[in-house]
Length: 322
Image (cartoon, rainbow, N blue to C red; front, side, top):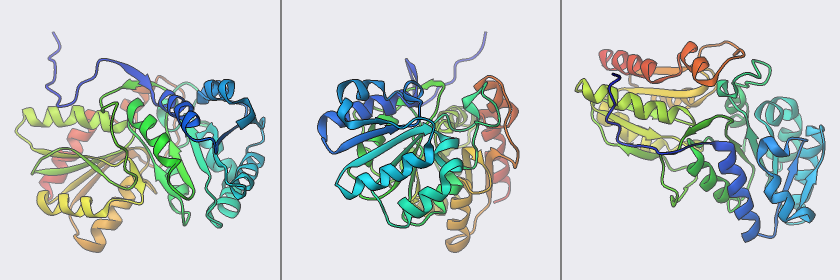
């Protein structure tokens, strides 16, 4: 019989983070009449249908014309609207990078770029759709805020929080059903890391779907007597450097875990912070300079080394380098 791990966070339900966006977006529409939606022919996939049905006059189906969608969104902000654009993460970034750079980031337009189906967990659609470079692309843009929540509840809370933030935001979420393990009544603070578990041997910084894998890894390591400080980095930019440095000053080493290329992702941001302030051993869990492939989400995470077992290995290696 398989042993049940004593995780400090538990779940009774799984739900996709894109549904957290859809439900948060609908609730937001009811609270703020300036919120408008734009979608590039993927209303069902982005879970924007309920908003469209309730507020048809505030929803714009632009079709398969993502670049045009970004231009329309930028223009709407001039009239005081708060546009939320919706399409897949690869179309939200790679296909329209010029429009985002020139029309949104450069002029600090109040556009919320909402991107679903990010990372390997997109699954069977394969490498062409499994963008693993988007966080890096977006965090390099001046004025851009980059958010990558970990479950349904956190995605819903983040969706509602970004409407109150003035300026462009990139909100990243995913397709698969995933454990819901954060509170439904949480307060989402942009730029504020969440210390989920206190520890003394290693600082484990995780983002997005990999936060749950980090929770599982923490339980595995605790059984071996290793004390992990687990920090949920839902906002990659601006990074909570104060929380990062305070944790690593205590533990002496760091591990980062993300569903993204090692180049340009969360690990990159943590490394820059440490090297400038308090150099310490760091290990990285992420995709190592490769494209993805078609497969089941959990199988892909295992094949590419983005799971609890690989986080455990990275933690032990980081500790051995202290």
